[in-house]
Image 1 (tube, rainbow, N blue to C red):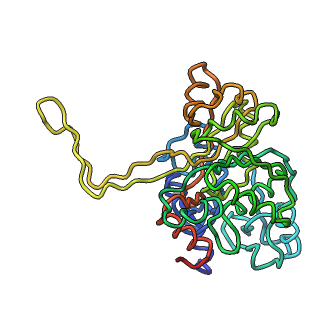
Image 2 (image 1 turned 135 degrees about the vertical axis):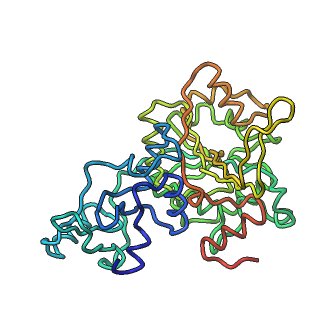
Image 3 (image 1 turned 90 degrees about the vertical axis):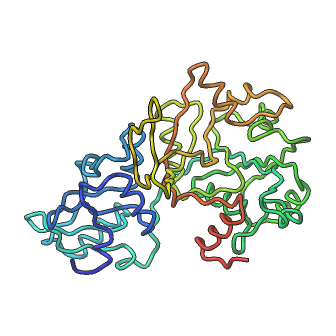
Length: 358
């Protein structure tokens, strides 16, 4: 292969979905070339993987099984100007160039042929956002003895500002902050900020009400589909994708989930009757969906939250499921999820975003 940059984004069609996700996270890429030796087979994106998992594909399924049939690639007889025009239209991360035998001749990367950042013109969706910012941040003490968790810095911004900026990319303009601990400090901070160009409202929990209990205070305030986010997580995902999934499937609630791998550093044993060994596995890896702390809700659910009672969002999900309402899950990779809820995770997020650790 011509260079390491191209070699890094090549994956064999027999590689599993799980391995593809891990490599995408390691390389911070969202699109791979699928190649069988020298033969071009197709392209696989993180979106392709997410759609396949939503359809209940197993993590062990080969990526070759989930490839789109209709993709755009360049041919070696085309001029560089023509290929650049195609890339501009598609806003694609890179463009493979093939010969008439479908062998890879070259790859043009966006960051090498264009000076501008790769951002497409996407339809704005003005979706209300509720940010649960009332917690005590006990796992981040002693820092949170002085400032509330939503105001913890990430570089020159607070975590809350970073979250708001991400939703602004979607088109959101109306933000509702559920506050309790050091509520005045949070309110005063945002009263003095005049550069966010959004509408921020605060509603106060007089007492801790769990991860959803305070939503009853928004009855008659929010009348459309809305996002709910914890104040200590960032998701590297186009939020339009989550919203489109939620609406297309007519979900009442959609949870964003993280594909999390757990490695057991020991051999595991399964036993049967009489203590006899049934099977053994050497240092197995288990893959789970875990709750990322971001949701989409339909507005009628606010009426199902008890007033002034401690009530978690998992209680609401159980309630909807018991009456056979639709609760969906939108998966994101582990590398797309940043969490500052604990000291080690906060430090990891600082490193990830290129900021100095304390």
